[in-house]
Length: 436
Image (cartoon, rainbow, N blue to C red; front, side, top):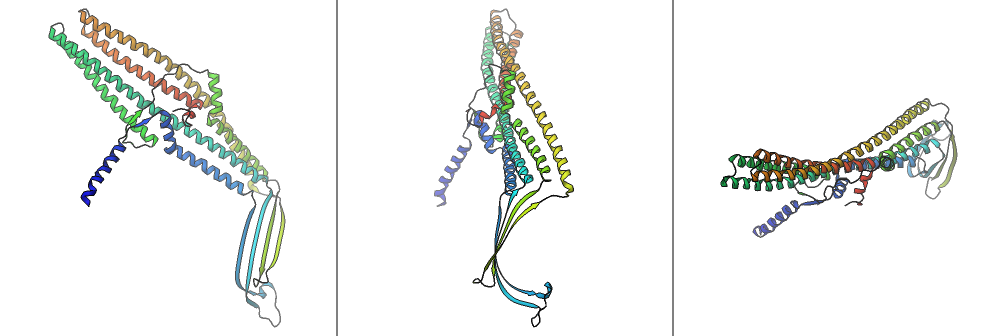
């Protein structure tokens, strides 16, 4: 039986290994959504939002009617002398006797402004926690997008290095043919070999960079780190730079930090009102009902309804709480002002980076064309007997560096676009499925 099960076990292991090595095809939107679903930072932010909602519910419960019910069955004896009774002919202790008692108690706050303002303050705090959660999601999205671009850049570098190897292999073959024909020198062959070795080293470095970047991305999105990442998007440089005023208006409307600061300031203002409201009277209504007797057949109903008016006469902590709440309000207003300045700084910085990246891409693409043309001219001059090996070698270096600069400029431009979307709050479109 064990021998029969062995092929099935080997098949299961093979299927499991194949499933683990299945490439993971990812777009930047899919990577962001996976990170938000399993990422630690986003999960902790959601927990904080849930705790804020629980605190709000607790404050609301203080305003709602409270009711309790009890059913008691006990056997009791009473010392009458304890209550000042001494009856001739009767022992001081009466009983024991059975008692059946069913009790119902209820209370409701009719007017308690302090409790109402406290609830409203916690409600604003819960709203602020919601926007804080969105802020954490935006930060996670920006971080994952950068990791995605690093993998994408490394992949582009691998492609460029492979193209360099193919080109320098052909140049080496040409140098060897010229040396055999007597029109070239051994130095030409040595320099061609050196260029090919440099290209191979650059390819190994690019492959190592891609592996490290893939591991970082898989870790950030909570995926199996043994899987291979396949990049489904291609980096695209921005074509236009949005106006500053439009970008600032968009950021003020979409950045969750702005809304969070508003809710925190509102919560602090309501906390001040709640502290002051403790100086006002409060009104409540209590109800107590009691169904009692010695036996279940002789139970009698009694009840008590009371209206309570509470007036604070002297509480030393009220003024201290008011002063503390005012300080907290001042701090909330200061933080809101600072956040407004930070958001404006983020937008202006991202716009300048975006503009610079756009210019860099244009210059890098032009440099690639010039380098390719220079390499072609150097090779033609060398074949015609006018050029030197040093000229060809320098042209090859310029060619390789131009392609490297173009890849870096393209990746930096894509990163600048994500920074701009993070600065204006537009990065949330990757979370809702509006972007693949």
